[in-house]
Length: 192
Image (tube, rainbow, N blue to C red):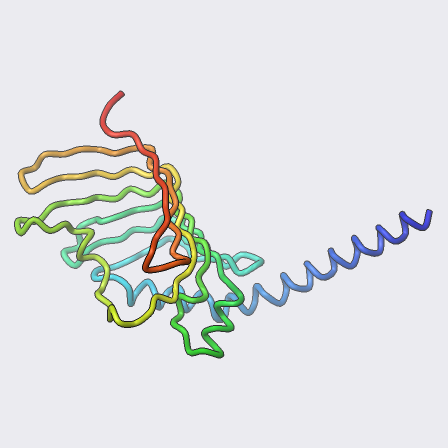
């Protein structure tokens, strides 16, 4: 009988703590994290990033739906059904205490069903090389999370117009030891 009471009290305390944390974290995240994500998106690319919705989950995860990335020429570079961005509480502390960049707060990023359009230019460079704005290489990278790609497609077109499709792209890239990166990917090239 006493074991049931103790287990019930512990379970109740854990549930109350989780509920209280959710009610505290979500409003904080809505006020601070969502604007940070919007700012980082706008500052990171040469071109535009648009999305249908941006929601902040109960524990600070930011969910973007129907994401569309276009280059400076307004041509599509990437689309994704959903992008989920985890928030690292220790990263938020680093921003406040150490003046780290806003990306320090970002944790695991999961990209659902992306389509990337890689096009070669006449100078033999690729559109995806130019989409991100250049940063100062002497600055350390504050992002230490992992990027997961789930069920992606890569559409490739070279300067001569030859096309190839890489489907079923799944993988992960870890940035925790940057500039050293760890990752793995699987994909299907061409037709079966």
